[in-house]
Image 1 (cartoon, rainbow over the protein chains, first blue to last red):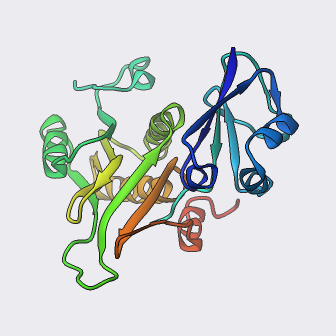
Image 2: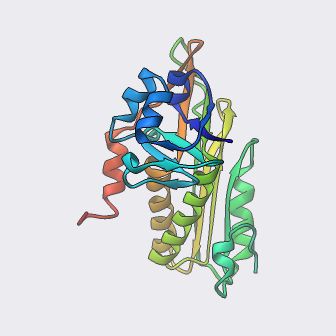
Image 3: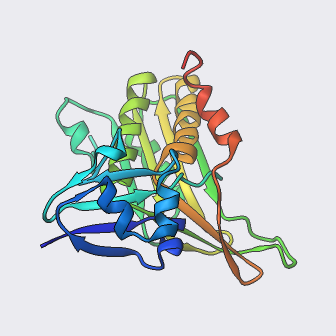
Length: 80
Length: 170
């Protein structure tokens, strides 16, 4: 089984895909190592949020995704 | 009583009209506010804001299309939370919040927020409140097609300033 990572908004272009399936469990260090250098760099921006199972993490560095979990990488939302 | 979509509102005894939805196809915003008005005959005020993709621009910089992406587990729940906050903050008889996702053409409505209240101030301010939060704090990412190229729309400082108006002490 696996953890699914969704890339939202402009991160989709950076990642080159809408989603990626990786092996569980997945913590913050694991996330940074599997998404590629460009996405990992964006993730260090404090304005980029991470959601796990539909909840935005207050401290993304404490991410711990387990089997079957869905993670979303959320760049700053567009204004208008 | 008219209640379409919000379990949040179903727990309380509610006589108001709440209609909070994401739409993936073009819609008629006037029908939504007419519906609200028809459902709230005791309201003395209906305020409606409609945001749409600018049409009529010409030249290489004209917007040819707009695409809105969202994240299902967060976007609609976030809009429903916003409706609850607006309902707590203002004295409302009804609230409609409709937001498009997907690809939009020039002239297409993007968003419609319509509020009904006994007196005008609550309706007008509730719409303003919801729009400021939808613009800067809702989970939408937008990109524009101009001159054949897609470009993501970045966050704007002005949107955050608009949002801060509602929490002056924060």
